[in-house]
Image (cartoon, rainbow, N blue to C red; front, top):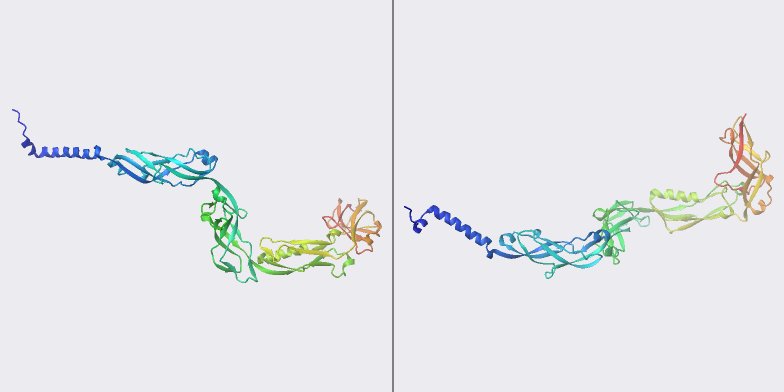
Length: 437
């Protein structure tokens, strides 16, 4: 006989009551969690906006976003409480439509938010908190070289009468021929008036020193432009060598080569004006610079023509050397008057040709019949010269057997104020034949 169900016995049955309570709890939990009353909305702020220019804009036109690239959005989502409560800004994808970006300028871009889970996007607004858009500014990206100036406001020399600064030299991987390449938006590059390397160190100098300087791009008002960068310059720093120049006064003394005998006793034959020059220079380079000046104020009569009696030598600033008076001219003058030239064709014979330094046990013969010579001297004296007055001294030093060219010197018998003028060598070429005896 079946046992009749009793509600009283059911409630007093411990195991059944435990099972019933568990089932009831699960039903109540499911109702709370998944029931219609658990659907909620939540506003998530600070969602990054992905803004990517198309290939045509970024590669062909070289456009870049210079303002607004870090825009964020506020997204309202809807879904189960358990889902939306766990969402963060990084869980939601918001992108901007850049399809209409085809040149530099300001743009308003529409936003699109995409759900990445079991929830719905209710709305999305940009940083203005009202519209589903963000604003960006695009500009053409430029790279342009600028010469670098040096600013060293805290450096001084120990004695301004003895020392002064030379032209500071900027160096480093970023520097090519004293210039650096600045990268940035076209608009910002166009604002640059100067690029300077600023030395912030404070010191009193009397010799050359090297410093690390900060690169700065400045506008027309001297204000630093922070929206550009310097290619290959780590932390926008370069090395600057600051030369310290020393004062030197150098007396100029001319010298003479191949002076004709007739002028050896002439006073003030050569004058140099000014007789001294004042220079600022790096001590190690001053001596060489002065020696170079001295080499230029040499008068070589072998090369002296009437148009060369007065010559100007320009002293210019070079690296490490600065003339006190700027670009200064030195005048070198040979104090002779009525000087002219005359070209004469001279027949060659044993009567007017002498061989010197002839090799022993060798016979030397001329294989050339005539020689053209250029003489220089007082016009009146030149007019009296005949070909038979000219003497040719052929130097055979170092010659061996065979037909060859030897170097000859020309003189005019009895006329010691006349000289011969030669081209590139210290004489004129004469063809001879050397025969071993």
